[in-house]
Amino acid sequence: MEFRQIRSFLSVAETLHFGRTAQLIHLSQPALSLQIRALEEEVGVRLFERNRRKTTLTAAGFAFRDDAAAALSQLEQGVRRARLAANGKLGLLRIGFISTAGREIVPGIVRQYRELNPDVGFSLRNILTAEQVQMLETGSLDIGFLRLPIGENSALDVVTVHREPFVLVVPASHKLAKRKRVRLSELAGQDFVMYERTDAPGFYDLIFGILRDAGIVPTVSQTAGEMPTLISLVDSRMGITILPASAVKHSVASVVACEILDRIPMSEIGIAVSKRFRTAVVDNFRSFSLEKLGPFKEPLTR
Image 1: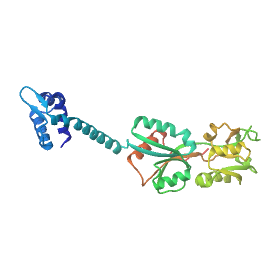
Image 2: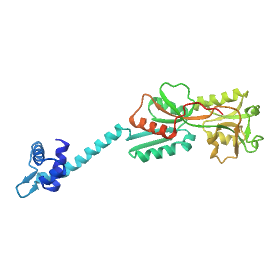
Image 3: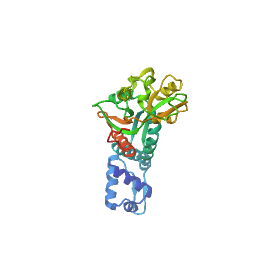
Image 4: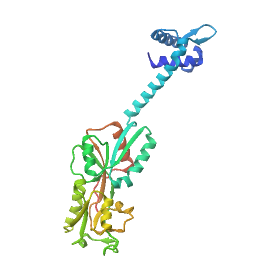
């Protein structure tokens, strides 16, 4: 039983006229008659009664019509969904993101993508960088927006999609708060609150490297796994810290973000996918994200 036979049957069942149906579906009347005859032979009963004056559905034809229409609709839906899936426009995307990406990147890119791909579903979770890497490697996460650097990782394909300056975050009452612009050499002897290394080893090492290059060996009074928590610790006068500028932009804490005058690396966020666990919808979303956000090809410093 073929799609074209079912479509031809349903068209004749609607018009009850072989000649009119043949014109509508751009088929010769003899060819249409052959299709209906072949369908009747396969079903094993007559579906139409025909004479020179009229065509009518038999009782079997009436019974077959509704089920045939439902089956054809379901098959056509299956074909459509198969084509969407093959083109990366159907499926579920499990996306992890760090807090900064949750504010600066993810809402806009997901909204734009959904407008063009309404059949794609999303599972969005705020996940720390180290956990994102593990989940991507095991296939339990499809896309990660994570804090860079993460070091060499042959299992992942990582591209930088966001870059911004680091700032020094101090309590509003701190002596440097009025300065607004500082050099790292002025931070000698200060207590620091730092990002927990187990949550983002590359980022932790980057900050320590920036301070080391400036001749600063920080005394770390407290660590935390979330940037809002670090800002709260600064507000509590537990120490000062270095964070991406956007981490402080929306904070209501009584802290000040000072521009760093030294020439230092920029803060980066990357989009990461597994090289092993790749599907068409993952590649489609990744390509869309890179088109909209633009990959950064050269490292920048200030």
